[in-house]
Image 1 (cartoon, rainbow, N blue to C red):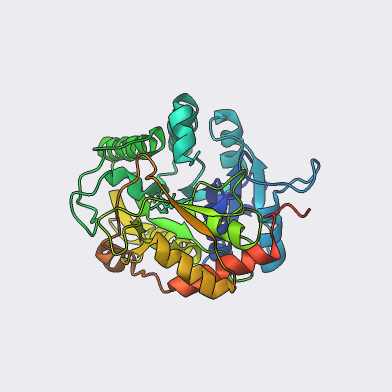
Image 2: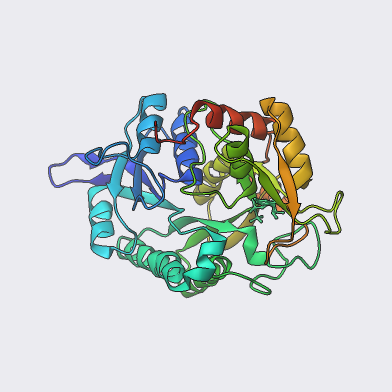
Length: 366
Ligand code: UDP
C-alpha cells in the first residue's frame, strides 16, 4: 500500500482500461466476485465511453459499471477518460496505488478499421503507447493485454499454438494494430527487465454473465455472428446472412473457437496471479479459447435449441478477409495459467439468450 502524506495508506488497485466494454466489464465482475482473493484491491476503470451506454447524460457511470456495482454491492472507481489523455491518466495513477493494469481499451470493428485506419492506429497504438509511458512514469510494469487470434492471420496449421508466426497475411488495420502492440510490448520487455507482460490472444468471445444483467451490446448492426443471431432470435433483425458455405469445413461454413466471456474473464484473473511468481518477467503470449471449433450452422442449431426460436438464415457469398477455420491450441493456457474453459456451447447460447431476451435493446431500456 502506498503511504499518503497524512500517514494513511492507499489500497492497492487494479486498473482496467476499457472496463465498461464487453470483455472488460465481465473481467471487472470476475475480479470482484473472487471472494477473498482480490478483496483488498480497489478496481479502477477508465473508459472513454465510445462503446458504452450511459442511461442519462448526468449519470456518472456507464450502465455496465452501474449494474456490476448493484450485483456485487461493491464500488468501482470510474474515470470517463481516453487513454490518449496522458495528463488525465496521470491523475488516475496519482489518486490510486496501481499495482497492475489490464488493458482492454481499443476500437475493435474489423470492417470499420479498413475504412478508418488512422482512427484505429490512433486509438489502439497511440493510446497504448501513452498508457505505457504513464505506467513507466509511475513505476507500474505489470500488464495484461487484450490481444486477439487475429494476429496469426491465415493459419499455416491448426490448432493455432502460440509459436505460430504472427503478423503475416493480416487483412485489417484492427488486426495489425493488435500485432504492432504485441511487437511494442516485446521491445519494452527487451529494454527493461522490470516489465511483466501477458498478452492474451482471444479466440471468439460470446455469451454473457449468468445473471443476464450484463452482456454484449454492440452499437448499430452487429458484425459478429453471435450477437447477430441473438438479435434475429429476439426479433430486432429479420434474417442472418451466412457468409459462404463452400469452405473446406464440416458443413462448408466458417469454423471458429467460441469461448464463453465468463471463462475468458477468469483467464485474466488467473493471468494477474502470475505477477506474484518470483522471477516472473518478460513478454508472454497465451491463447484463450476452448480448443474446439464450431461451424456457423452448428451455432445456429445450438442457439435455436437454447432459445426455442427459429433463426431464419440465407447463404450468401464469402465475407472478404474471412478464413475457413481457426481454433486454439490451449495447452499453454492450461500449463501456464492453470486455467481452462469450462462452459459449453449450450452455456454460451443459453447465457446469450438470457441477456438478449431480458434486454432486447441491450443496456438501453426503451
Ligand atoms: N458470420 C456469418 N454471418 C454474420 C457474421 C459472421 O456467417 O453475419 C460468420 C463468419 O463468416 C465467420 C463466423 O461467422 O465464419 C464468425 O464470424 P465473426 O465475425 O463472429 O468472427 P471472426 O470472423 O472475427 O472470427
